[in-house]
Image 1 (cartoon, rainbow, N blue to C red):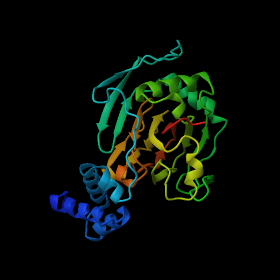
Image 2 (cartoon, rainbow, N blue to C red):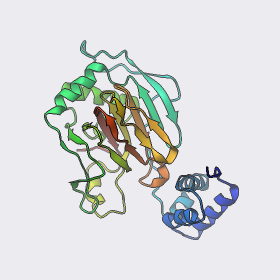
Image 3 (cartoon, rainbow, N blue to C red):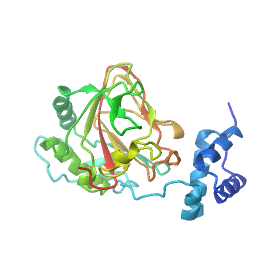
Image 4 (spheres, rainbow, N blue to C red):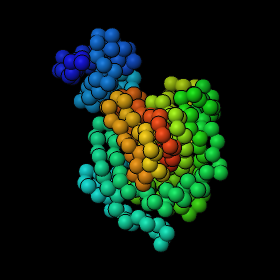
Length: 293
């Protein structure tokens, strides 16, 4: 087993010197990897050095400046109390969401009992007839395309397309203290056995030529909420490779993560591990910087 690597003051001084000399971040990261540093430790060291050095050093490295992101209410406690504005007798939630795990860097919060059994089953029923092969953003044009990295089936609801979507979207807005209109419509996905979504970032890469067109509607994505609509028999975890953190897909639970800039220093690389038995259903909500129309 390789020895554990630690971020030393000497390493941070070297990174600061590279920033002050105007070296771009990808060059700094590549030099660290070639010197034997793991990708995870290199990215963490770069981010910590930037945070301690302030805006000037961030700009010197050519990185995007951090922006405000959604934050789960009371995520440092064990419960988040939510009273839905559209609660109905058919909604069998208890009114409180459990915080099961909370990471600060990267910002990841695992939530228990975010959706009720009725809501999970209702989303699946509404989405099932509209599923098609999932697509990803085509970076060169801003359009979408089928990609071998993503082998699920999916569909999008319009925002507030029906009463169930509207209730869940209002709950998300209350939990994250983020404007309702800054969210994309819910996307529902089904992963059959042996399908997956390889590790990726949810933000739009600012270096790709098609990104400008995508950003015209709502700006950058700044956070994601993945809600589990069923519990697969085996497999299907949401994985965060940079921090060796896996979230098991359990019906009604959800995982939130935010990214304050469109760059790997956020350490929000994530993916959907292969479903080994049964199938997995999820609903995803992406939050934007501003109004998404």
